[in-house]
Length: 261
Length: 147
Image (cartoon, rainbow over all chains, first blue to last red; front, side):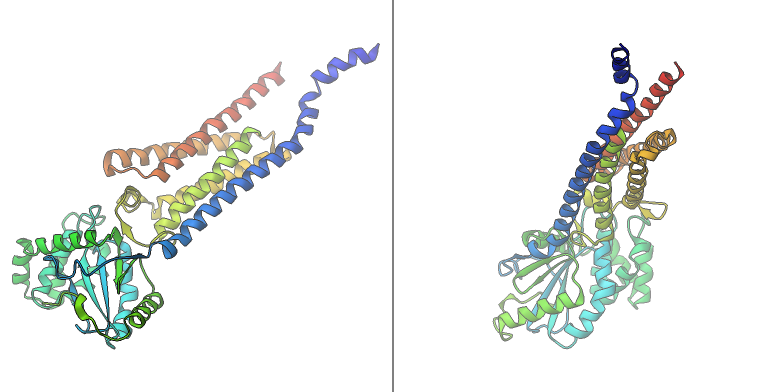
């Protein structure tokens, strides 16, 4: 009875290979299905997140109740009576604000603000996680005292990586150097900076942003709509154009942005 | 599913988690913005870079590597290659140590938790557990062969 003797052996010894062979097909098919499933979920989730900001982050805000209401005071560039008013909430230490200020904003100034299509008002929105941003806001406010907010704004953003919280614990010497470079009365600037003279204004600007539902920087408010996140020149131009169309003519100047000192 | 298939599946999930964090760090995904929140705090902290690359990008390279090795390890030709299991365990061990260091930084230094970073730490720990089990299987098989 060789068959009887062989049977158990055939089940015990070769199974290692033959069962493996038999299962291999099923197993790798299941494996591929699972990989495909994970890939589908992954690609879907990332695709969803990637497309999200543009579609859902545009919220309507009411700017009437906050303009000129509190002691918040932004910094205006452009014609006071420009037909469209762009409000920017930004943090001097935020990398994307820096990217916007140095890459996009020059175009926005020369092609939108200087021709008088819109003006822009900058408000401080110092974020907690940035250690030196409050000092930067103070440095800029003290430059504003001497009528040079915007040169200081540009200088601070250009050199963001040398004074930010990742680079140093003591940003003041950098700001002092910029103050000299842009032609401020440095002694006067330093007195102002050391006294944190405009700390309250900065806090008020932040509070203003919070009231308007700003929770990331940069956030732009154009017309009555809020646009969180960086915008390219083209995107911003389109938003300005549509705000201009919506308002028709430069009427109803009620929501005037705070003027430059 | 062999253990290597499980490792490959975990690594693929890890690829997507770290890809998300890398794109986020590069500003391609989400709003290119700084906002309030723990992931922002963690991902913009000075520990979010390692040897000049974002930590998330290191994670991405790591998972791609583990995925490739474990996938190759499932091919019939390489199924019995013990060295693949050893490499997987060694890499996963490095990954776990690195994740442990990052999690320590999150908890003790930055004092903020980034949920996706924690997810990645869990995935890499599972990879280590499963690939260690895979290696032990070889040891057991080796014993059998010796008998």
